[in-house]
Amino acid sequence: QITLKESGPTLVKPTQTLTLTCTFSGFSLSTSGVGVAWIRQPPGKALEWLTLIYWDDDKRYSPSLKSRLTITKDTSKNQVVLTMTNMDPVDTATYYCAHFANSDYFDYWGQGTLVTVSS
Amino acid sequence: DIQMTQSPSTLSASVGDRVTITCRASQSINTWLAWYQQKPGRAPNLLIYTASTLESGVPSRFSGSGSGTEFTLTISSLQPDDFATYYCQHYNSYPYTFGQGTKLEIK
Image (tube, rainbow over all chains, first blue to last red; front, side):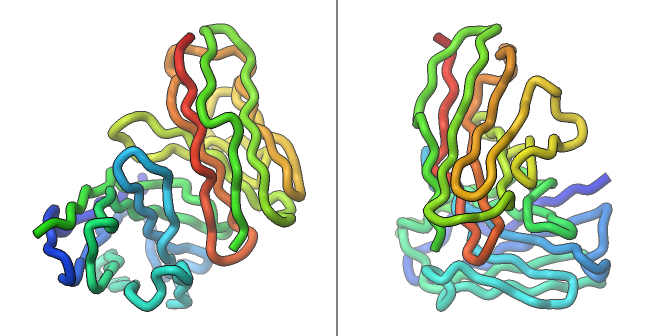
C-alpha cells in the first residue's frame, strides 16, 4: 500500500524559506521508473505542478519557479524534500506530494499541507 | 508551456445525467493526458491516464477519449458521489500543467 504524507510549517513569513518533507511508504525511490512530484493549490484555485524527482535523481522544475525551488531525495529515509526560497503571500497554498511510476501521471497523493505566508 | 483549457468551468447536472467535460491543449500532447477528481478538502484522485485508460478501482461510468489537442471526460450516469471538481493534466513535456478545473454541481 502506497502512502505519502507532507510535513512542515503551516505559517511562514514573507522572504523566508519554506522546507517541506514528503515521507512515503509502499515504494522505493531507488526503483527504476519511480518518482515523486510536488503540486500546489492556492485556496479556491487550480492545481499547479512545481517539480519532480526521478529514481535516478533526475530533477525537473516549473520554469516560472525554477530559481526558487530545490527538490532532493533521501532514499534511505523514504523522503523527498522541497525547498522554496523567498516566500510571498501569493505562495499561500496547499502543497501536495504525489507518486508516479513509469509515466508521469500522479496515482497516489498525500493529504496535502496548507502553508500560509503572512507577516 | 502547453496551456490546458477546460470547458465548461461549471456544470450543473442531475443524478442519472450523462455529462461531458472537455479539455483542450494549446499544442499536441498525443495521449499524454490524465483526469483527476477532487472533492473539497481532499487530495485529487486519479481517474484516467493516457487519455482513455481507467485507473484501477474507478467506476466504469467514467470514460475518457481524445488525442492530439482535444480530450473529453464522460460520466455516463451521474451518481451523488460524482459531484466534485475535475482537472485534466498533460504530461507530454515539461512543464506539466493542469486545466483550470470544472466544478460539477447538483442541479
